Length: 387
Image (cartoon, rainbow, N blue to C red; front, side, top):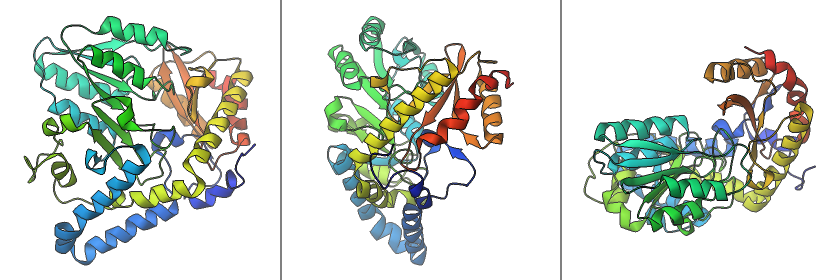
């Protein structure tokens, strides 16, 4: 079914993926090409050859070069992009930098990522503020209900809306541009958890009309683990600080984020190698292959299980979440039990608790083919007893 002759199992050799496993969870932690790991190691060796000169003379130019590649790929200016370890770390920086008072409110989605929800709740609780969840309908079939729910949830004390661009549990691509415009029309700042977006969908961040956007590059943009980026609107940069306050405090957004102390920056410096790998196939061709394959995988699973997906096809990226028939123990423990059973059978897929059911989320990447999902389809109904 491949719409590019270089895609499919022929690409597995580019990665360190174990043989004998159906790798269907690229959206969980990504998979880094060998060439990118080698580029990161080259930077690591370069650092160790002369550490003092490296940190004083080479690090900042290298990071700014990498940021320039990010800007060309995902929009805007290099000086508006900085690096963080992951999307959760970037959102923590945004939330910790936001002045909150008792009685203030923060909007989030019912499918907010668990770690981000914890961060929002923690910082809101310290200030006496509170979270206001907005329901994401399951299955997600249109945008109108969500936008109406957001407008109803906005109140006079709403200070921030924190929205997922692509939800983790439901694998739903949300209308961020429309959501942001609605919030900003009410004077509400918008931070976006774009953990799954970069490399999975076409993305031009400045055109979204948000205040902050944080995205992982180690999932769908082929970067090494611990590589994420934060985009900050110019008018917000003076008030944004990394979670580790260090020597560059007061020297500006880029200076503060580029250096928070001695650390291994090799995975960030290797971002150009990751984007080179993506560009070698064409980002649009990669996205098209993955989205078509994910759609066909979703059709295979829903038909085999007599079930449904968490989103209509037009709202799905290169992932699809399908309801497990007769879900056992629809909670985190039940999800882990099903995941363990799948893994014992050589299948790695994400298992999520959502709306009182368990859902299996599968991803499609350039190393996958449709037959990779066949064993999962066959096992689906038997998983109802996996507790």
